[in-house]
Image 1 (cartoon, rainbow, N blue to C red):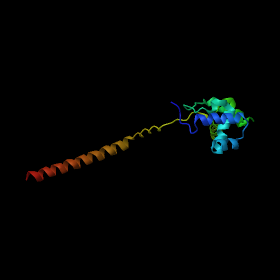
Image 2: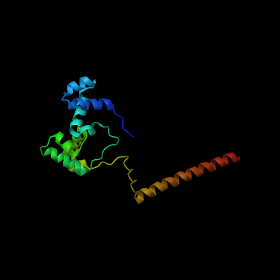
Image 3: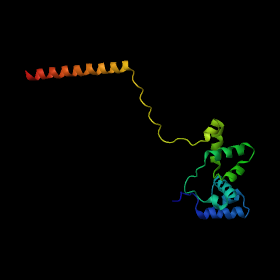
Image 4: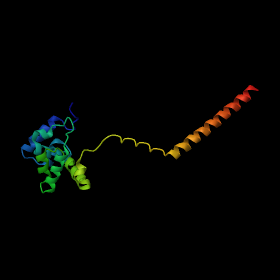
Length: 159
C-alpha cells in the first residue's frame, strides 16, 4: 500500500532530470510550478539517496537507538548534516534535528524508544485498618437507617 505522495511520479522524474542537467533549485521550482521549499527538500533527498530518495515511503522507517546515537555523535563530531544523513540513510532533515534536540535535552536516554498509548491506572492506595473500620461503620449506620425507614413505611401502609 503506497503512501500518499503530493507530487506525482512524473514531477519527481522531471525533477531528477533537471537536477542531472545542472538546473538550480529556483529554476526547477519555476519549471515544475512547485514551492521553493518543496523543491529544496526533494533535491536534497535526490542528491543524498539518488532516485530512491524520491520514491514515497510505504511505511515509517524504524531507527534503532544505537544508530540514532551514532548519527548524533557523528554530527556533534564535526560532520555536516548532509554527510550524516547520507551515511546513516536518514531520509528527512527533521528526523535528525529531532534526535539532536532530544539528545541535548535528555542525553542518550532521550533517543530510546518512547512508550506509546495510555498510561496504566495507578493502583488504588491500600486502606489502613482504621480507615476500613470507619468506612464499614458508616456503611452499617446507613443500612440501619435504611432498614428503619423501610420498617416505618411498612407500618404506615399496614394501617
